[in-house]
Image 1 (cartoon, rainbow, N blue to C red):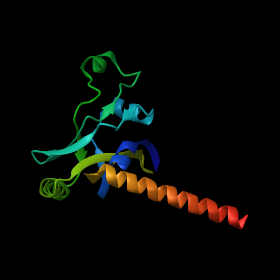
Image 2: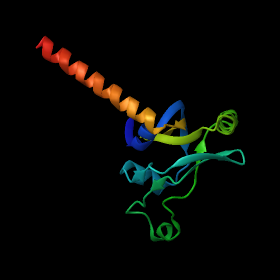
Image 3: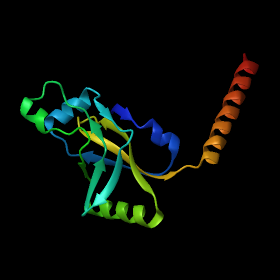
Length: 153
């Protein structure tokens, strides 16, 4: 697995409830652009619309060597369809509506079989108090590991 892009902001701002792997429908020049790391996941989110799962605001910049015809009609932040089974789509939509969770893409990567996959997650917005508590715990763990390391030295 070759990691192309990671949504670090999502890991920081949200509490992850469940993750899922999904394929994504792309044109050939978008595949080339992703292989050249011309992708941004920061503002992207997932919606279920008319029985289809769409990722919105996913920015894939134009591949430099694409034809002029494609350049004229290309939108970097257009909606892209996710490849999930109908059962997964309905489950995802129900969980998003029932529990007020949001679905965001976490990572985009290339598998061993050269397929481009998107790791999506159902997330809940983290409060500022929770973030501070997590940072305190990380600091305490870091200090404890340093103390152990220095003591053993």
